[in-house]
Image 1 (tube, rainbow, N blue to C red):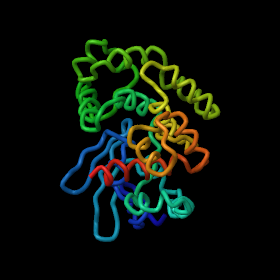
Image 2 (image 1 turned 90 degrees about the horizontal axis):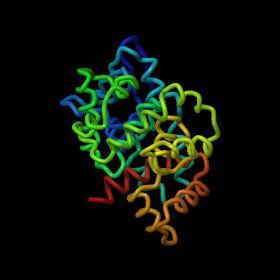
Image 3 (image 1 turned 60 degrees about the vertical axis):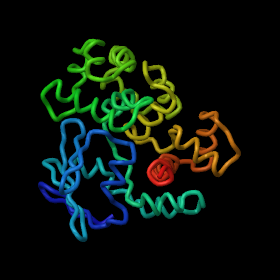
Image 4 (image 1 turned 45 degrees about the vertical axis):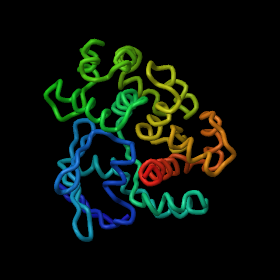
Length: 271
């Protein structure tokens, strides 16, 4: 990955392995907005602006170290895509979403975001998350203490619907420090721990594992992945079986494969 890091910006030259639209619109992050120049995004208390130029992208930020890690810039995605293209099912999705990179986001932010995401659409998820931020007059993602101060009724007013009760309970079951303690657990045990939290089912747990804990040996299965699976493999509508079958196929590349397939299925085949 060819890029240069400066004090206040990162210049990314490998456009074939980095595309802000693919990265931000593939369902792994919700705290971003499109601008006239590109995108602006937030993670925890950090902010970055992404601007496209003819032969590079510029990531403008006060914390280049954070976003170098956040965008996984030291990881060679050309090798990952080469390995995945050995599977026929991956060739068109990778051609379509060539610029996807899996973000290294904060586990607590991902847990809250994906509890909100359950049976929801991206526009509504974004609206709710920005409403939470505005509640505390900040662009930053709310802290644990700030969220803990809200009542179930507050969450309902902010647009969470039935998820208000789930989030209210979840905040009393887990906190950022506990999530930090779980960092080194085996994936299976960590997944079980996450599923024990209110509002966290298997798909939400896998998303938190992939985008918050950087576990690539998981495969979140939703409606789009279910449909895709049934296009290429024996028909099955039991998502846990689909998940296990896909992990058996893609092994430690499962998380990467899921993102290319999900983005292609939802963005291209949907049309």
